[in-house]
Amino acid sequence: MNKENSENNWEVNFVNFINGLGLECLVALGKLENPITKKKETDLRQARYVIDTLDMLREKTKGNLAEDEHKLLDEMVVYLKMLFVEARQEEKKSQDDRS
Image 1 (cartoon, rainbow, N blue to C red):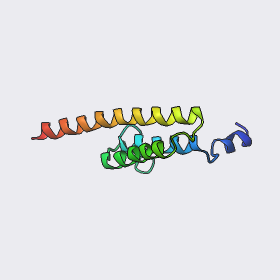
Image 2: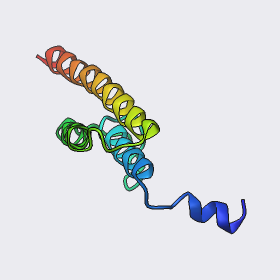
Image 3: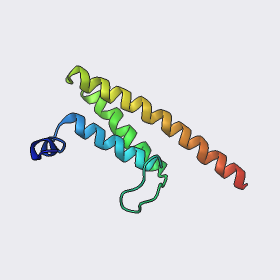
Image 4: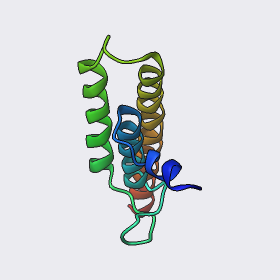
């Protein structure tokens, strides 16, 4: 990979911002390894915060996004909400099993 392509990966733009929030949420949902602890950990409160932030961005940017940005944001929110529901169900099941 040349230097120019490498620098483009770090460009500040809406798509990279949304993808960054999505990755943060995947870490909070325990789907990706936490880059600091090197472990998969679940923090549903943090995941909910990121999902709510994405929902707020979706509402506040309505009508102001390019089609690909709008589609990415919509799909990201739906996907993360689905994973959140699954993670919450797993957590509840785990708590019930301990009871």
